[in-house]
Length: 413
Image 1: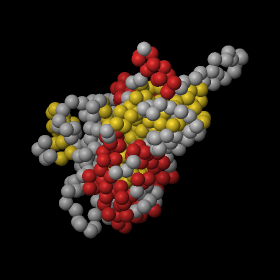
Image 2: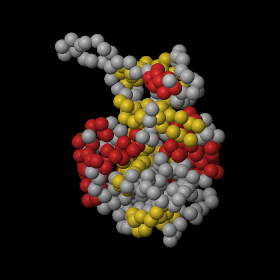
Image 3: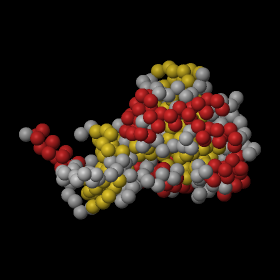
Image 4: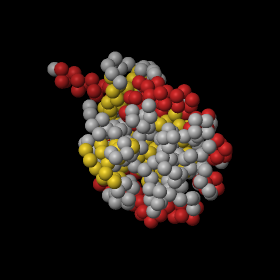
C-alpha cells in the first residue's frame, strides 16, 4: 500500500497531462505537460505548463506536498574542457563520447554547456571545431544542450603563472584570418572567446569579435587597469575564472585582480570547487561583484568523473587526489577541475551565506544573461522549458529529474 501511495504521489507531483483528442488530418498535435513543486527562489508551490518545448504558463495558486522537490531552471556551464574521460581538445571526440558527456551532464541537472577548446596549434583547433560542428549536426537532441563553443586561448599571456597550463609554444598574438577559419569550421558556433587585453592586437580583435556577437572574456591575463578598462569599453563583459590563471606573486597594488573587481561592467566567473579559490576570496569577489554579477563555472577536464589516481594529460603526469584535486605532483599546481557546478552551488552557499536561489541563479540565469542565451536560464513564460527538479538537504544538491526543451532526459523518480 505504501508503494501505491508513493506512485500516486509521484504522478500527482509531476502532473503530466496529455491531450487525447483525435486530430483532424494535417492538424498540429499539441501536447501539454504540467510540472509542480516548490519554486527554488521562495520555496513556495508552483505549477509550470509546458507546450511545444516552451513554458506556456506559470501558476502559483497550487497545492503540493510539503516534502516535494524544488523546481529551478536547468544549469548552464560555459567552460567545460571535457568529462568522463572524454576531451573536447584534440579533435578525437566521437558521437558516442559526446552523447555520453551530454547525458552525464543531464543526470546532474546541467542542460546547457559550452565545449571549451584551449590553446593548441592552428591545425588542431581547426580540426577540433570541425569535429564538434559535425557531431552536433549528427545528433540534434544533443545539440539542444550545446548552443556554441568557448575558445580559451591561444591569445593569452605567455608569462608563467598567468598562462596556467597552456603550452607557451602555441600562445600567440591575435590573427583575425586565422580565427575566421576556426569560426567557419565551427559552423559559426564560437560563442565566447577568452583573451588577454595586454597582448598586441587584442583590442582590434575584441572589436571584431563583438561585431559577430561573440562574447569576449578576460582571462589568463596580466593586464592592468588601463588595458582592462579599454577592453571593457570595446565590449569585453566577463572575467574568466577570476583569481585563477594568475601568477602566485603579483604587485599588491597594480595587478589584474583589482581593476577586474572594480569594473562593474565585468561579470566574474568563479570556480568554487574548494581548491581553486579560498573561502575568503569567494566572499570578497561576490561582495565586490554582487550575486547578480557572479557566475559559477566548473573548468572541468576530461578527468572529471574519473576515480583518484595517476593520469597523463598536457603531455605530463597528473594526479587526481582522493579529495578531487587535479595536480601536477612535482609542482603542486592545479591542472583543471573535477567538480561540476553543482559543487559550486553547494560551496557558494556555505562560503558566502547567500540563499540557495541566489546560488542557483549564478549557475543558470546569470550565465544565460552574460553569454547571451536569451531563450533559457529562467522560469518565465516563453522561455525554453529547460527545467530541473531537485532536493537540497543538508547542503547537498541532488537531482531528481532534468528536462530539456520540455523533454524528460533524466529521472530518478
